[in-house]
Image 1 (spheres, rainbow, N blue to C red):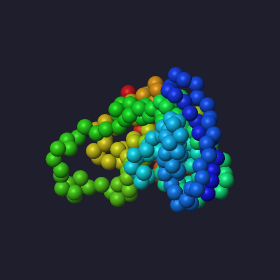
Image 2 (image 1 turned 30 degrees about the vertical axis):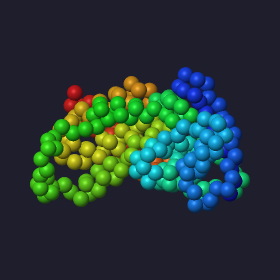
Image 3 (image 1 turned 90 degrees about the vertical axis):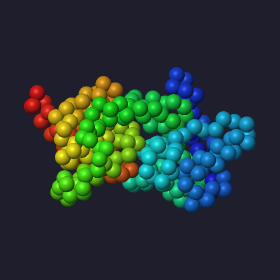
Image 4 (image 1 turned 120 degrees about the horizontal axis):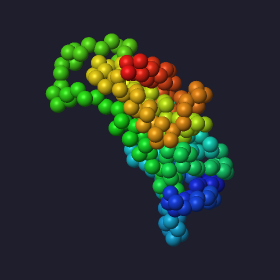
Length: 247
C-alpha cells in the first residue's frame, strides 16, 4: 500500500506551522499507524531531513499519549481505539491522510504533532485525589461497596486522560475528563473525604486553564478511546451543585 501524508510541521510553540506532504510506499495493511510514521521517519533520516515529532509510549492503547487528529477524527478512523491501535488496513490504498496535533487552546503545540497536556495534570492536582491512608492495605471486605457502584466507578476510571474529548469538542471542553475523575471517586467511600470540594476545585481549575463549557453535543463520548459515557457529566454537575449548596 502507498499513501500521501499531509502532516502538520511546527518547529516550536512560537513558530508558525504548516502542512508538509510526504509519500510512503510498500506499507503492509497490518502495519500500525505509528509504525507507518516510524517508517516515514526512517526514510526522512536517511534523506538528511528532520523526522516528524509525535508522542507515543506503550503502543498498547493504555497510556493515550498517541494523540493525533487523523482525517479530522481524534485517534483516527476507529471506535473505542487509540491511534496506536489503528492499522493501515483502515485506509484505502493511495489515500491522502491528514495528520494534525490536538487542536485546543489549552494544549499548546510543543513541536510538530506533540502538544503539552499538562493542563490535565493541573486539574488532577486541584482535586483528583484522596487523602485516606494508603500505606496499609485493609482486607477486601473491610469497606463493602455495592457492585453497581464499583462497576460505575471503574467505568469512569477507564479514562486515560489522552485529551481526545477536549480536542474533539467544538467548545474545547474538558468536562468528560473532569467528570470521569470526579465520578470514579464519588462512587467510593474513600473519595467522600474531599467530596465537598473536589468538583468545585477541579471545575475552577478547568475554567482557569481556558477550557470551554459543555453543550452536550456528545462528540467527546463518540471519540473517547475508552468509551467513557457523558452520563458522568451529570454526576459532576450534581456534585458541583451539592458543594455549592453546602457553601
